[in-house]
Image 1 (tube, one colour):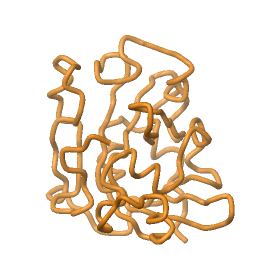
Image 2: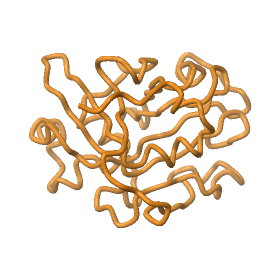
Image 3: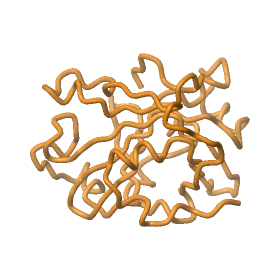
Image 4: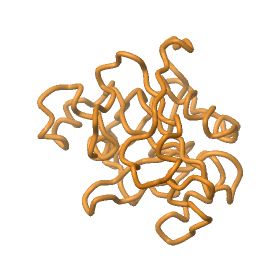
Length: 203
């Protein structure tokens, strides 16, 4: 199996990390021993205190977002809409509170297990085409919040496919219309033409 991404990977600027995560593989070791894997096909960068779309806008700090303030290479998992978990990759040095949301992934391993947790998904490309769907399919919840992404239950390995600059599409982030100027910032990155990318996602 490929080696886990080094800590240094996560300490670069957040936009660079968001782009570099595309094509990388997210792994989840379940408690009973099953191993799940999915290729990251979409990311969104959130830039801390000056980003009005961020949970850390204006330096907000609470029990909910405390994991955002950890050093890069940790997971920030939050609950949204009262029903869905979302996974973020914390970046940069501690206390900057910048992170990359993982909105969509391509299932690679443990697909039947994912189907059991995502019974509403009619097609394989619908298993993980939204941030809440990733967490549901891979059994990621509050237990993962604040965990190292170089640990034994949740980690990321390097790209297993070739990706050129022309393969990466860019757009504003989704679902943040009430964020002032930040709503238009081009901080969503996705693999052009990949069927697993979220469309006009809700969760």
